Length: 138
Image (cartoon, rainbow, N blue to C red; front, side):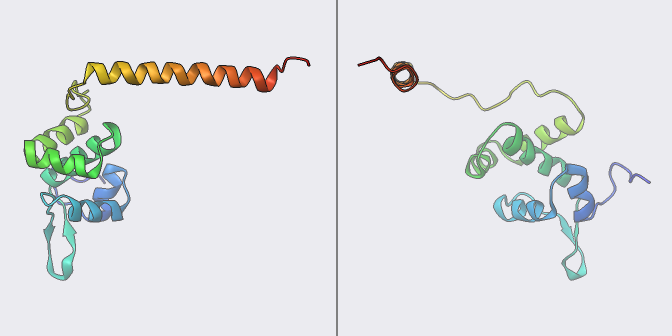
């Protein structure tokens, strides 16, 4: 029997709903201070709907958008837990999030230098391959 949407969930139920191991949820509690499930006597965790949404937002940032733990911590400090919760809420609702990542300014000159270096490396690799696999007779 499926629980009501706003029912409390144990750590095993929350982990199953989010398709994550339980230890990941505990780790995220330590890493991101905004994640604070309710605790009963004996330390048993109970996750509310808003906790699930917040955890799912962290999952979206880490697993889908490729942020590091430090990057997500920065998002928490700059944009707040409500932003992360909204990402999780949107993902749980099955909606496609238009913003895939936080916009980053690109230094055009540095990008062009990197592209030129990559092209040079590619040319060198092609020459090396030709030398190794199609040697010229002596």
